[in-house]
Each structure stands twice: as structure tokens, then as C-alpha cells.
Amino acid sequence: MNKYFLTGKGLAMLALAVVTAGCVQLKTPTSPTLGAVAAPTGWAATNTPTPAACVQDNWLAAFGDAQLTNLVSEALTNNPDLAATAARLDEAMANAKVSAADLWPALTASGSGQNTSLLKRSAAEKNSGVKATTSTFGASLDLSWEVDVWGRLRYAQRSAAETAAASAADYAAARRSLAAQVAKAWFAAVEAQLQLKLTDEFVSSYQDTLKLVEVRYQAGSVTEQDVANARADLASARQQAAAATTTAGSAVRSLEVLLGRYPATELHVAADLTAVPPAIPAGMPADLLARRADLLAAAQRVNAAFDSAQAAAAARLPKISLTSSLGTASPELKNLLDPKNAALTLAGNLAAPLFDGGKLKAQARLAQAQQREALASYRSTVLTAFGDVENYLANENSLANQESQLREAAAQYESARRIAETRYQAGSVSLTDVLTIQRQELQAKSSLLAMRNNRLATRVNLHLALGGDF
Image (cartoon, rainbow, N blue to C red):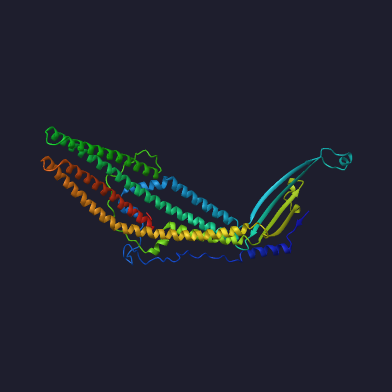
């Protein structure tokens, strides 16, 4: 039996569906704007309306620290948070492929086999040749396709692709952020080790002072109060050394976690902090929109939200779908592929939503609200980025000046302490004067170490804020 149901009308329906599917032109999302805010022609903090050079990449090499470069490479390979971000990127890319597949017809193959046995046959059935067991075999190819008349599927596919692009930008931002975190954690660990070394030195200094005071006390030159004061300052210095030991260990463990290592405090840090590299060009504020990965991700999410809103609006319109099936059936498996046993059917379906309790309308409103949210989030992210750059640029000169003043203060306190110790041995000044200057020297030198680290961290933050790659 030969059955073909692909009539002239069926062919016309198929042709009309194919043509109609591409007749609706998708709307193109406009580039997200900053609303009432306009990017200036130059950075306010630098007072240079026309920067001479663009932002430079490869900022990590500017610090001239080979060990830091190796640590960043290790973190990029082993950091679990970055691995999770990479997995989210793979998820977004796979989802984009899933959405793209919805634009194509779905073709499935199926086969079947059935045995039917009569529990009891009458004499007449036996005489007429009715078999006790009969077999039936079947095979079919089934095709289904939703015709994208209004662009719903194409909008959804484009939104998924834009979301994947946003995830790719997120991954780039995560890599840069991780490199910056490792650099700052490295500098913090070096500073913590230097702070520990400094407190140990002052513990030794206070011990020498106490020995001197005890000798003078035995000679009757000072009172018991001087001995108590010297012992109290030594105990305070030892407490600060213990706290510095804890801080140094915590700093190293934090860095090891970033590297994907077990936090066992086994990493050896550098002997000193590197110098802050020369000033860097900041480029133009408008260039930031195309350089910073987080801003690119936010812009892509605005586009994705626009297309999602368009897809939600198109979902309220009628849907046209086509189904086709080519199948055969035969009591003999060997005759299953015989064209005489084949039948082809083609059907078109039109489905229009009549009542759904307002579900589709609410989904469209939801998508529109998400679109407005994405745009507002983009503007907020851009303004925050501008603010970061302005702050770090302004801080650079201020911190450099503060470091210079702290360096001078530390040198002067060291000189004053040596003079005071000499005069104390000669009996010209009191022990209180010596201990006060020692404390001031320790504070100044500790603040200087913290400021050196602060300047390095600020430079790293500036590189990150400008969108420079490493």
C-alpha cells in the first residue's frame, strides 16, 4: 500500500512557511548610553585634557618582579574561583548553541516491533489460515519545526549569544582581577614580613635599653620607675612582634589560597618591596568603555535584555509549526524498507494564545523591567569605573608625597633616638625621652612600610581601573 499525503497544498504550505520565517527583520539594540552623564575629554585628577599616550598593557612586567609574574601564572592555572568563572562561560556558550538549535527543524527516527498471539483460535479460524502469532514491524522519520514568523526564536538566540559574550567579558575581567589580587597579596605579604623584621629589631633595641637601665639602676643613677618603664616598653614591643608574626602568617596563607595551594605558610616572600614604577598614561575617559571588561559585559547584558524583551513580546503572537512523518509498516522485517509500504504526511499547526491568566503579558512586562534594570546597572557600573580611575589618579600624587614625608620623619626619628641614647648614657636626658623617641621611630618606620605597600596597591588598582591587561 503506497500512501503519499504531500499534496500541492502541502508543498505550498511548506514554501510559505520557509519564506515567512525570514520576512520579519529583527530590531537592533541601540548602544547603551550614560543618560545625562557625558564622558569628559580628560581626567579631572590629572588636569590634562588631552593625554599624550594611551593606556599600556602588560602592566605586570612594569614591577620587574619575576617571582610575582610566576605567581600570577600559577593562580591563573589553579585558582578555583577562576575555574568556576570559566565553567560559567562554557555554560553560557552551550546555552547559546541550544538556543540556536531551536531555529532548525528537529528530525527523529524511531522503530517498532510487535508480536500478537491469539490465546484461542476457533476451528473456522484454523481452517481459514488465521495464524496464532502475527508480527508487525514499523519505522519512521519524524520532522517538526516551529516557523519563526515573528522572530521570537531569533531574538532568544541572539540574547543567548549576547549573554555568552557577556560571560566571556566576565572571564576576562576575572583574570585581570585575579592578577591584581595576587599582586596586592604578594606586596602585602612582603610588607607583613618587613613589619615583623622591624618589630624584632625594636625588641632587640628595647632589650639593650633595659640592660643599660638596669646597669644604671645598680649604680644608683636611676630609679626603680625607670626600670619598670623600660620593662613595660620591652613587653609592648614583644606583643607587637607577636602580632606581626600572626599578620605575616595570615598574609602568606591568603596568597597561597589565591594560588590554589594549601595554606601551609610555605611560600617564601621577597626580601623587600619593589619600587613603584614611573607614572603611567591614563588615556581618554571615553576609551574606558571599550577597554574595561566589566563595562563590556554590562553593555552586552543590556543588549541581551533588549532581545529577551522582544522575544517575550513575540511570544504573545500566534505560533506556526510544521510536522512531517515518513513511515513504513510491514508484517515482514525484510519488507520494512520497501517503498510500497511507505507513507508520507505533512501537517501545519497554528496556535494562538487566547487566555492564560495574563501569564504572557506579565512575562513581557518582566522582560521589559529587566531591560531597564540592565541599562541602569550599566550606567552605575560606568560611573563607578570613572570614579575608581579619578580616585586612584588623585591618590597617586598624594601617596607619593606622604611617603616622602614619612621617609624623612623616620630618618629624623632614628637620628634623634641615637642622640638621645648617647645623652642618656651621659645623664643629660631622662629615660622617658629615650623611650618616647623609640616609640616614635617605630611608628614612623612602620607607617613608611605600610605607605610603600599602599602605593604599590594603588598602582595595581589604577592599572585594573584603566582596563589595562597584564
